[in-house]
Amino acid sequence: MTTGTIREQFDEQGFVLVRGLFTQEQIADWRERALSLCSGCDGEQPPGELATHGFEDILLNEDILGAVKQVLGNDLIYFGDSSLHCSPNDRTFHVDARGDLDDPSCTDYGVVRCGIYLQDHTDHSGGLKVRVGSHKRALLRPGTIKRVLKRKARPATLLHTPARNLKTRTGDFIFWSLRTHHSGGAVILKGLRRLAFPPRFDALIPTFLRLPDHENRLALFFAYGAPGEQTERYIRDQVGRRPEAWEASTFGTLLSSDRAQKLGLSIRTDGVDAHRSVPRSDSRSL
Image (cartoon, rainbow, N blue to C red; front, top):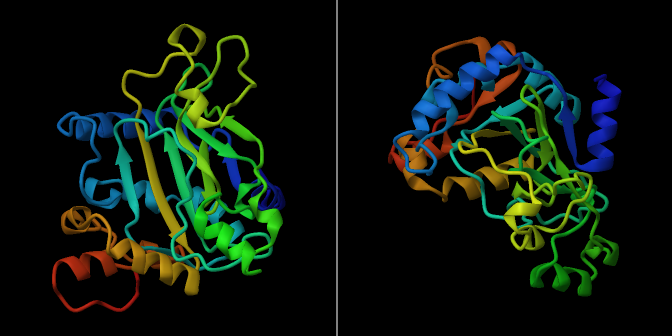
């Protein structure tokens, strides 16, 4: 996928799906490591960000960073917002943007979420569902309606866009705007695989009409931000969430290697510093 195609797809759809970015050997290695970590967590996320569990090779992957840079620019920030999911998320459309005070119809958001599903979701349910182009729309909720009534957002931001099940294959890479409306646990119908319903309807589809889920559904999620106030607001919000995850995070070898700096990636440890009661460090480019 070319640079122009990545940027165009992101601007139009709010996400980018890169087919076959990783080899089957890479996926098999990551899946084996993920299964080992999930085996003792009873379906919960292992505490700590991904580098803590030895996934620095993903966070510093040049193909991943190269794709994200086409959207966010050449200077990226990794601040520890990452996790291994050992089971599907709840079926509900939501956005991950925090402290977002800008009109989505005419502004961009400076943080993206990346996802690697460690099993096929073309013949199995349980993958990602998005509303195409919803990064330019607001999630319908009371606060959003108030912003429209106060003329701080355009009425068009309340219009919904079509749902799509992103049927990822092993080896695919996907990233999306934190403003994009998305849901986990997408249900794919037998014989009608192109159809996609809102998550609330997915939950009502009987088992005999849907493609099965994987017994072990594993996914790696991680975020990068561009320097700017939107990223700073998001980091401040995340520092106050999931203190057990920050307390367990070590950032692995990211803090002792100069490879991140060479790749244009700044490492921020705000969450770890805050929850270990030590003075906050400055932004570090390593």
